[in-house]
Length: 75
Image (tube, rainbow, N blue to C red; front, side):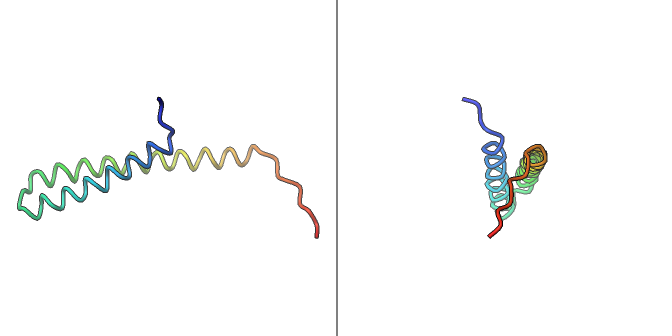
C-alpha cells in the first residue's frame, strides 16, 4: 500500500531523530567512526524530510490559490 507524502515525511523525521540519538550514544562510547556515519545518515534523513515538508507546503499553498474564497457572512 503506498504511503502518503505526509506519512513519509513523518517517518523520515522520526528516523532522523532516532539516528541522531544513536550517533550521540556511539560518540559517548568513543566510537567516533560509527557516530560520524550515523550523523551523516541522520542529516540525510533530515534533509529529505525537510524537502518533503516543503513540497507539501507548496502543494497546500497552490491548492488554496485554486479554490474560490467562501462567501463571508455578515452578522
